[in-house]
Length: 358
Image 1 (cartoon, rainbow, N blue to C red):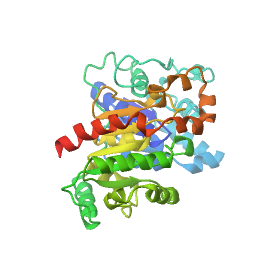
Image 2: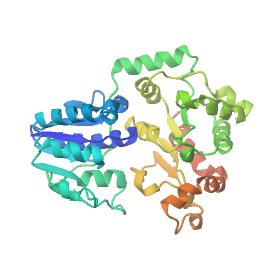
Image 3: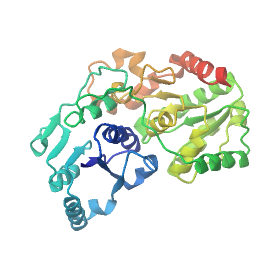
Image 4: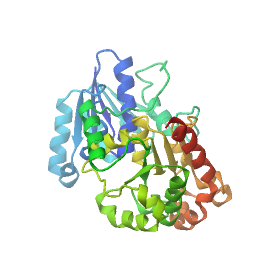
C-alpha cells in the first residue's frame, strides 16, 4: 500500500506528524510511506526509518502555477492508494485530488470536506496526556488502523553517531566544559507576538545562573542577532560569564547535534521545544498569551516537559476573549506575565531534572 502523508507547515508540525508515519509502518504491513513537507523542514525528518521517501514542496510551486501543475501531475503518476492530508489548505486539497487515491483523509472543514472520503472534526478537548496536537493527528489513522495498542512516546529525531561526536567536538573547541550542565535558552519566538519580553527573559537567565554552575547557550536565528545581543546586555555580569554567546550553529542539523548534548531547554514555546522533546531533552516552555496551551502542550503529565501560560495564573485576563483579541493584546498580556509567577517552577525543574542528575 502506497501512502502519502501531507504536512506543509512549520518545523514543530512536521516533526509531530512523523508519528503518523511511524504508526503506519508498524500497523499497515508492507506500506510504502511518502512524506510531503516544505524544503526547509528536512532536518527534523532526515534518517527517519519510518519514511521511505521525502517529497519536497518547493517555493517555486507557490510562485508559478505552471510548476505547481507539473508537480500535481507528478503526484498523479505516483498512484497513491491513500493520502492523509494533515495540512488541510488549498494546496494540499489540490494535491489530494490529483493523487486520485481511493482513500483521502483529512480534518473536517466547511470548504474541504466534500473532497475527502474520510474527515474528522478537530477535537478541542483532550482525552489523554498526549495533547491535542497529537490526539487529533492520530485520529486521522482510524480508517486504516482499528486500534493503536501501545504507549505513545514523543516523535524522534534520528542523529548519526558522527553528528553527535562532531557536535561535542564543536562545543569543546569553543570552550564548553562538559563537567557543567549545558542549558539551551530559546530566547526568541518565531515572531514578536510569540516572544517573551526580553527584560523578563533576562530575569529568567539570571535566575538560572543563581541556581548553579551552568553553561548557557542562546538559540536564535541569524536575523535575530540584534535582539540576542540586546538580551545579553540585559543579563547580569554573573550570567554573562556562563553564557557562550559566540557559539552559533550554521544549520538546523548542527543545532540538533548541539541540543542533543544539553541537559535542558528553557524558553519560548515553539519548534525548538518540540525538537528537544524528540531528542529526550527536558523542556520548560513559556507560552504566548494568545496561543492556546491545550493545542501544543504535549506529554503534559511528564515531569520532564513543563509549560506555563498566563492563563495558569491570571485566568480572568484570558477568559471570554477571542483568539483575535488575545493576539491584539499580546504585549499588554505579556506585561502581566512576570517571571515571579513561575520562578518556583523553574527552580524545581532545575533541581529535579538537572542538578539532581549532575
